[in-house]
Figure (cartoon, helix red, strand yellow):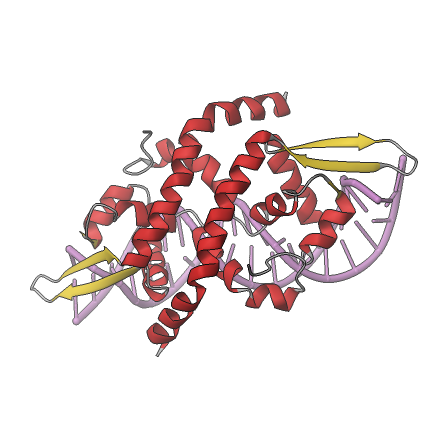
Length: 121
Length: 121
DNA sequence: CAGTATCCTTTACGATACTG
DNA sequence: CAGTATCGTAAAGGATACTG
């Protein structure tokens, strides 16, 4: 098992596990992976499914996920052009793990909300 | 299952699952949970174990995790004072799930690094 | 349709100094 | 020892306008 704590600043920057986990960080990557679990989607559809993401941010996050190999981007030159995004096997694996996390969150959100109220009071 | 996509901006802000997952977001919460998995630690020890976190940021993140009920803070008034942080059952559950994720990252970081090189080239 | 470009705000984080 | 206070930086994100 690789070490991810007790690291100096430069070690931490080069830690591959931290780099990967930092991708799950951020509001959007997880939601994008979820949205693509049922099959490929075009840019516009993806934007509608997620709902509250801007075009610029969606593009940014798609590029980042594509770079790491979680999804593929394929252009069907029209006109009009149609760009399809689809999870890779790696992306499906990660999406599955994150879904476990989301299900846990769904089961426990009541408890957590109460904890917050207690702390704030 | 609660819905976490296709939400308006205000729905998203009130989505309990998104709120919980946003806690895993950020560089530090996950590392703090990991550091406390083997038992309680004092503030200073926790800081040393993580290595590259500042005092201010550690405090901030500990308060946030305490607020959600993932850990408890107990003060042993000295002098000198000693403050112990310890995972709750909820915290241990979350830490376990995140460890699964970290192990997956450890197994796949080679593949991901290669994907990045291909994309950048 | 699927983006870019620009500008702005917010949030996280870092560095350093100080304190009961 | 375990913080708080203050200041500054950087990255993420939001809003809006424009384009092949």
